[in-house]
Length: 100
Image (cartoon, rainbow, N blue to C red; front, side, top):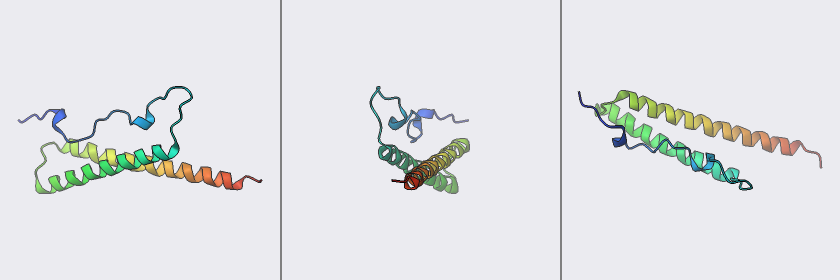
C-alpha cells in the first residue's frame, strides 16, 4: 500500500484566511476585501475540485477521500459566499428602509 504524505497534495493551507484573523484594536477590515478574499478562496477551491474531478474520471486518483474532502471544501466556500451576499443585500434593504 502506497501512503502519500499530506504535504504532497497541491491544496492551499487550511490556515485561517487573512480577513478572518483577529486585528489589532481600532483596525477594521473593509467588507469588500473580505468578500474578495472569499471569492478568491471559492475560485481556488473550484479549480482544485475540477482538477480532482478530471483525475478521478481518468483513474489517476489514489486517495478518493481527499477528493471528497476538497469537493466539500468547495461547497462550503460557495455557501459562505452566498451567505455573505445575503447579508449584504439585507443590509442594503435595511438602509433603503430608513426614512430621511
